[in-house]
Image 1 (cartoon, rainbow, N blue to C red):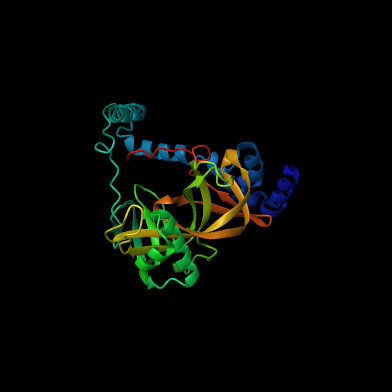
Image 2: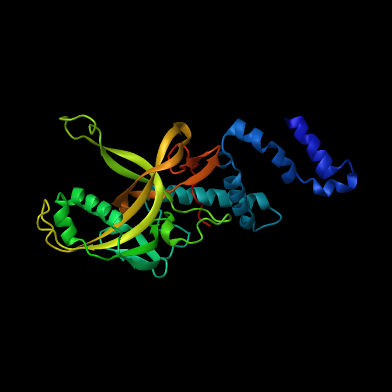
Length: 314
């Protein structure tokens, strides 16, 4: 209870000694109310004060006259409002942006027809084991409408495995768990758990009904990022007559057992299947929190559960 917490606070930090007041700052006292605040206002990230603190930080450099500080602040706020209106009215936000452009990472590798991402080191050749090779063949057979035998003949013996992929336009940098040796460190975030989307037949359980594809969201652990130089498949529909370079993601799917839809929180205890999908279906990184014998997936990319904060030009 709150009374008990304050009693412990007084006995441990203050110890009823006025000379120990320096051990009782507001930040330490606020820790007593974290649980109550979460119950009242939801997750901490949904009510944090960082956007306002950051905005206040941009006001201080705007004061150029110590005698009339408020006139300087008024002019600064007005100028920024006018600039924002001009950007919106004429759709020239990028041209008038004062933020430095994000540089392309060094040693990044682009792949034709994959404009939304780049590959990042390290990389190494990989001869897929039989189980993984069968899953790749199954994926490509569906993708190109070809027989498994035709796909096996076109699939090279060796593929290239990459450690990381970066989603462009300020997206996430996602790590493949098999090439990230430090992923289990206590002081590191696990950047291998992702949200991805697939088209699923709505009538798959009903024989004879027409195929109706709908987009469905899945969560899982990204285990491999594979670059595959596929040879021609003349027997495909339509025929693939020239070599093609593909980026494939091998994902261990989380078996979701319950959801809190309004907060985009999804619970799982174990993994289900391992599947191969095209890398463009991978959307972003998600967080995980262990909660009483199971994991909660925190998806802050949703429109409801993500706090929208527009970065100001500095």
